[in-house]
Image (tube, rainbow, N blue to C red; front, side, top):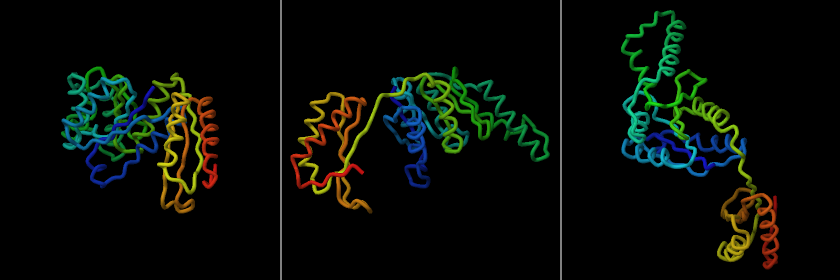
Length: 261
């Protein structure tokens, strides 16, 4: 099952905030035997968000969408999810109960009486307005939930909230998903050019269908200096065979220095 990540917010594209979602989602998926297939960044622009969500909702991938589900003027994700799915927005009854419980608890902590008709209370309830038919994603941090539509899962932009919510989705909705059979093997080549190694890489992929060869050159690594990280990835047995063939093929260049660590 391919997994995708959609990250929404002008603050990421402008550099005011650094993306902390991709690295963590990679870790969460890897811990369960899965891998991230793609990442997409979109600013706070309703047409672009709607188009991205249409791609996600009508595709076959599991997609986590981070950001924009609040109730301020720069939050558009809930509205765009409605447009993309063709569903009307409505206050989710479970979300309403959770948000009201949170507001009641906050008022008690401050020694105040909670007024459900106060304008602030009504505005907070907007965070529970989701496309009809949405499923709730619990938020252990502050009880303000996210939601799911099909295989697209909407969580806040705050990492402290989003990451436990993504874990919950993985362990609740995809616990039975069979982990992908995948291995990577790589070595370091010194004194080589990618152009020289390209025919060998092409031959490995031709001889081992389904195997992908990768080349990661570096010109200023602080410890290794100039080198190429060369490797293969794919189904475990085939990956091991392809890696052995790669090592054998490199013997054609005795002047290259090869290291596996």
